[in-house]
Image 1 (cartoon, rainbow, N blue to C red):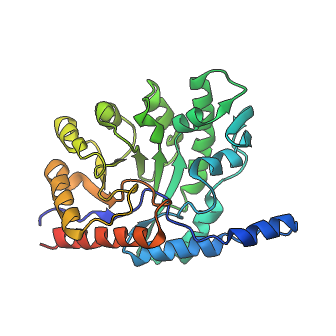
Image 2 (image 1 turned 45 degrees about the horizontal axis):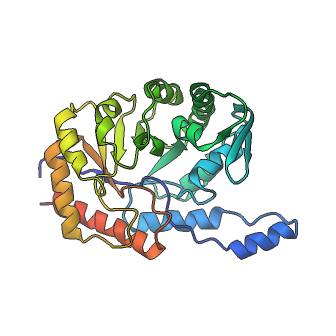
Length: 302
């Protein structure tokens, strides 16, 4: 096949095997919490073992949004995060985990840095300070800009995750994303899960290199992108569902990838699950990734 083989990657999370009882006992005994490094190492090992070429840290330490709001100044994590003072960057949130992953990652594998998007953060918190959604979103964008700068030397790509786009796309989305990635030179990706068929033209205008979407759960996206796609972006093709335990067959995935090639051609640069795999049984997540790898080999070695 005369098209370049895309890399197998992930959207972000991978099922973590955490000894929660040990952590709780350590906490209540006022001892230092056990290191997260063995958990991260195991997630990375499994992703690499499944054939993933662009690997994340597995997002094992905390729920994706909470890890950032817990790390930023001005945020207080309760049942929902509350913004109680102006949002500010205090210190890198994910850098230490990424540095550890880099230290154990095989030299032929690449590392994906992950940040949650400023719009999603602004929509997921209780705001007691700004009383203005746009101002709050830009405050998060500034903190995320500094986070992105801090992790860029360690990673090969930075992905911004904006799951709330499916619920409402802000008029200032371009400005927000541009601010987050303004001082990084590595490739960038925007992941928006859910049904984004109504905002595809707007997504294509965002200042990132790669767009990542749930093409398995929302196959109608193929038709919408075929109408609007102008090759200004590369595509990360969501190719197995992240919300179902059923493991797609290699043949199913092969057909899905072939449809992706029909629409995107050489601009199809990454293949991944639709979304994060955290909520799936680990054995299911691993098998989905191995089937993705096998399907890529079938399609691109024909």
